[in-house]
Image (tube, rainbow, N blue to C red; front, top):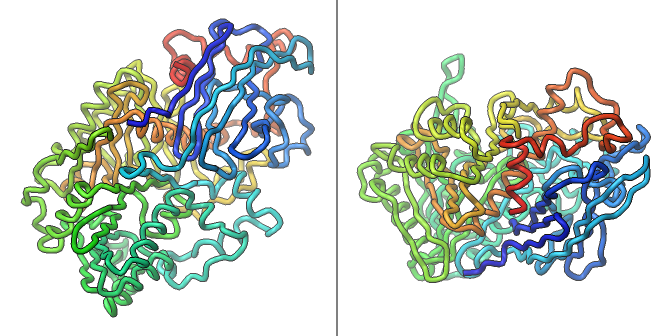
Length: 577
C-alpha cells in the first residue's frame, strides 16, 4: 500500500511535518520552547517544473489601510504565518513532488525580521489517491473567497458576475447559458470533483461498450444532462420525485412538473433505455453513476455531490471513484433492487448488513445501503468510531443541526466533553454552524461578511445563498493506524437512514483519512474567520500580525497554544507529530 502521504523532520527544537491532501498539503509546525521574539513561520515552496517561491499571507504587521487590497502581496518571509499549521492549496496544482522549506522567523527589534532554524521537506501531490483502485476529489468551495475575486478581476461586481455563472432560479438550470468569462471558471470552481465527474461520463460516452446505471437527486446541471443524452439506450436512471408542502399547502419539490428533475426526466425519456422516478420512502438521495462493460460492472462514482450548479460549483462536496469491480457490483445490485422495488428496499438483504470489500495492498472498505428497518445498522459504527477516538475527530455534516437524536448526535455531544481534538462544520438555515478551536459554537452567515468585515474580505460574493457546505463525512484518528473515514451521500441522521435511498462508506486507511482531515481543516479555516467577524463588536479597520511582547506590550501570538490540555495546544501538536 502506498504510504507516501507524510514526511517529518526536527531540528533545534523545531519540528516540521508535511501531510498529503487531495491536490493540497497540510504543513504542521511545532516549537518545543518558543523564544519571546518568535513571530511565526515563513515557507518557500518549489512546485514541479517551477522556481522556488514564497507562500503568501494576506495580512502583515503594519500595512497601510489602503495596502490591504485582497492581492497576495505579503510574502511569508515578511509576513510570517502566526499559526502552527497551514493548508497550502496550490494556485494551479501539478502532479509530482513539492518541496517546502519552513523557517522560524524572529523580530529582535521593532520592524526587524531575522531568520531562525529552517527545515526542508518534500511530498508528492499526485492527483490519484490509489491508482487503479480509488480516487477522491473535492470541489473548491471558493465562490465566497479572495481567490474567486482574483479569478474574476476586471469583470465587475462579484454578485453580477456570479449571476452569470449559476442561475438565480435553480429550476431554470437546465436552460442556463453558462458563462464564458472568466475562462474555465467551472473547471476551477468544481476542481477535482468536476474533473472526476466529467472524465467518468466522457469515457462512458466515448466507449460504445459502456452502459451507465445512474441515481440522481437534485439535477439541473446541463452539461451532465448532455452527456447522459448521448448515451441513449445505454442509460438507465432513477431520478428523485420527492415532494413537500409549502406554507400555503401547495405541493412542491422534485415531483412537480416544472422542477428541473421533471424536466430532465422528460428529456431523457426520449432516448434512454429506462427512466424511473422514485423516492424510496423519503428521498432518492444517492448521487451515483455505475459503469458497465458488456453488462458487467467495472467502476462507480459516488459521494455527496448533487448534479447541480450549486453542488458542483458552489458547495463543499466530495466524490469518490472506485475502479474496482467488486465495489461497482455492490452498487449495481443496489440499483437493480431499487429499480424493482425502491419502496420496499428496507426488507432486501442488501439493506440488512454492511458489505466488506478487500483487495490486496489496498484500503479496507465497507458499504451500507439504505433505507434500513433500523438506522442503528449504519450509524452505530460511526458512533463507535467517534467514541473510541483518542487523537482527533473531524466532521463536515451538512445537516447536523437538524439531527435531534440518534447515534450521530449522541456521539458528537459526548465528543464536546472529551479531551480529543475536534473540528466540525454544519450548514444550517440562515448560516453555518462551526465548532471553534475553543470548543464553542459559532454561526456564520455568508451575507453577513459584507457588513461586518474589513477589506479585502467584505467584497466577497455570497454565492447567492443556500447550502454552502454539503459534505457528509466523519474522520477519526487520521494520524493513527486505526484511522477511519465515513462518507457518501448519507446525512448520518436517523430519519434519513430509515427513509432515504443513500449509501454510507467506511474506509480504514490513514492516507484517505488524512485527505479528508485536511479538507475539513481547509473548510473550517475558510469559515472560521467569518464566525469571528460576525461576533466582533467593532469591525477592525485592518487585520495585523502580532509583534513580540517586548515590543507590543501584549501577549505573544503563540501563548494560547501552550496552555496545558487546551484545544489550541492539541491543535499545535497534532499536525506536527
